[in-house]
Length: 372
Image 1 (spheres, one colour):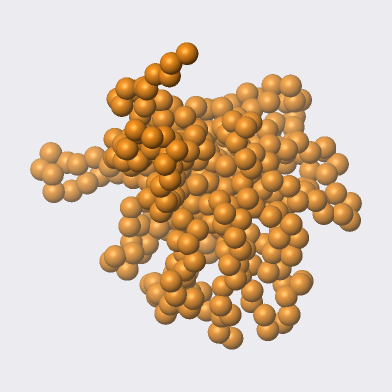
Image 2 (image 1 turned 120 degrees about the vertical axis):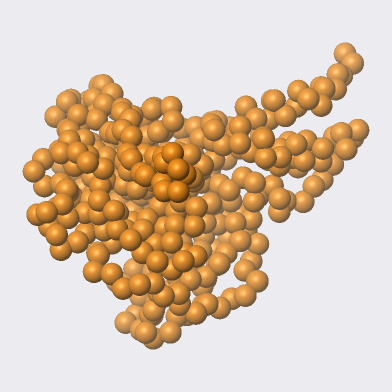
């Protein structure tokens, strides 16, 4: 049977509906298709349903005196796709600090590190490489270091000078959400009884202007939360709409909701007013209808948010670890736990891939003659 070459305009349509592994293979074997994949329109269409950018979830599972560490594949990934190249055994002695674009920064646990040691590593879940960061100064000041998302070694193995920010009396309690050139945290203040959720506010820092501000939670958002004690562990900030909007994920009594900050320009176009819009994502009982209702109404602890995949990782007390897709409103139970070992899951992290940085850095090899 004679082979037939697919039309050029059909190949991008197939690729945009494919998972990340298939897209990388297409880009590696066909230079013209790789160019189409890197176009802004393709990126926009693929990002609208980019659940395949989530490659897996890692977590620590503790039972009795033994420790088991596992990596599970994301539900959005085809069963034929390889697992992330992440040696989960490193979590026995290192604690994950942050995970982004396939890179995981881990810090050596103080139990295993000496009193004068401060060891950090960067693990690449795409290549499997582990890079040890240079030793920090004795003051152990918070500094930063850049790393390439394509797995290439850093150009300069040194710490940059610390970047200062205005002093604040807020206590940061969550991971930040990056929206444009602004970084947002949930923070606790001394106004414990005056504000919602026991004094929790949104603290924002604009990097370019080096100015900070605080903003109260959406009106009424904390009123719907479970129990009398409304703490920040039932709240999580997230960057939505491709990193252009700020959202607040709330664990309410009956459901999980998302509040998104909308900006509206006035008629004179001289000022911009902000308001919050609420959307129901999923009811608690819909997460797992086979589980007894009492377990689904337990406390919720948000463990992380995948900016590229739009997936929220949450832990329900006495139930287990769940990943929730905000776009499709689908939930996947990653790990169930018995009531007895309700607090056995910890250090859970999402592992995503920055597809387009990876494609721009990869080398081309020809396996498809005539497709140049």
